[in-house]
Image 1: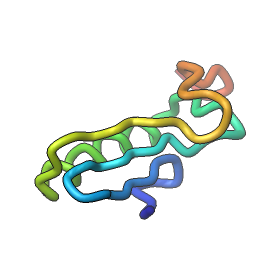
Image 2 (image 1 turned 45 degrees about the vertical axis):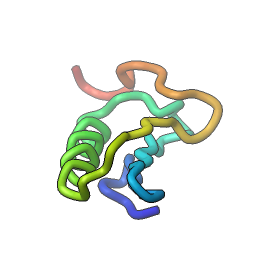
Image 3 (image 1 turned 90 degrees about the vertical axis):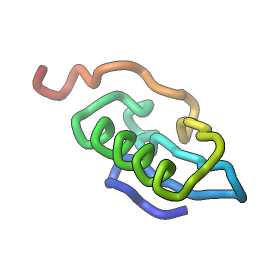
Image 4 (image 1 turned 135 degrees about the horizontal axis):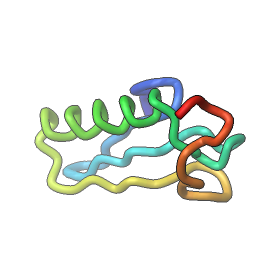
Length: 72
């Protein structure tokens, strides 16, 4: 697994890319770096020629939505 940003990791298993939201301490709540990381991971998956992408969250939640502790 390789970091795309501090909030997103990326790995492959054959033709499948696995993208993890990696802010478990904040329930993977959305911040700009998370969005940037997901977009970069999807671009990497396209460049790698993957056939499918699995998007998952680390920790006990997939994604809690917008991080209310961050500016709008």
